[in-house]
Image (cartoon, each protein chain N blue to C red):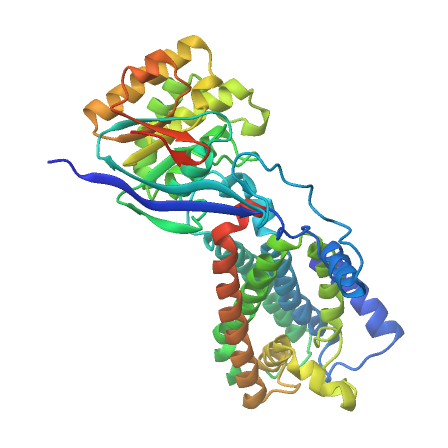
Length: 250
Length: 227
């Protein structure tokens, strides 16, 4: 029997390009004052591009429109789409970092995500401390984290630098550690975004092997951003393709 | 360290030079008791107010209940507060041995309540401001100034009894006032302590905490889109 790991129902995310605050109270105050005096808004956002998803009259950008899908437990899902198609926004919503404008996510289990580079590292903490921090955020016990520690370090190949703050890591080390943590800590769903692009070829192959074994042996659900790379395509069960914020086909 | 230097400055300026009364409480201990409470409150406010900005590295990558960070700030500062409390007790003990008379009394059992009120205030107002700074980043600069001003609206360097009559209502409206006064009363036995003020402070505190949590909850959902 297959269990549904993540179910997305009509997810829509809209960004309002005209209602964005200036980010500082003094500027918002100036804007308000200008409005009262009948002058033009001094901090008017740049005119939106009428192409793509901009609705010029309302100045709304639809990052995602009516996305619905189901992902079964243990599946490897490839997420494809060109730049700006909404891949990262979708992953952010799936990881609950931001909320959709409408629609909802029904998910069971713990989700760990590797969005862009670094998975929730605190730059001042050392590699070891960050492993503990990430484990704690997933609700793991200290002893459980300790048990995985050696495997994480071995996989990431950063044993020598584990007691150095991660802000001094090279981007390769950073990514290797992030991937290693994410793949070893106890989670039910693993979300991987653009991470494989940074590591060298040998590490990429290692990551793909690891992902394969995670899905096959441990039954983890994996969502992976792919840019049509053949070796990734070969082991995805399903592909979600986004075009301008809309689902094209599964 | 900060508390120590503040203590020296206050004793010199407000005590020796301007001779503000202290309700008959031994001067250094009067200031110390005010300073440790105020420092807790101010530090808690300061650190929680920028919680979104300081932890954006974590917040934009992983989901966990965001409130954990402000709570951990409040708890770690409580640890510091307890050390300073030991320092205050040591000071009382030393001066007691030298013959100064202290009238500590039974209201000392209120100490946990007072501590809790103090923590709730720091946390409540802190997360309220955190929700605002998520939208308006320049509020942080205003906050440093506001905390300075607020200190003078709290009986830290003066007792409530020495406050000007026409401004007393303002000082009493500050929920920290009753907390600091009760704290002093329980250790030194003089000052203005009454149940109505304390109850008023407790109600204000809970309202602020509730409003803060509500605003924080609203801000945490989508702040990552605007940060």
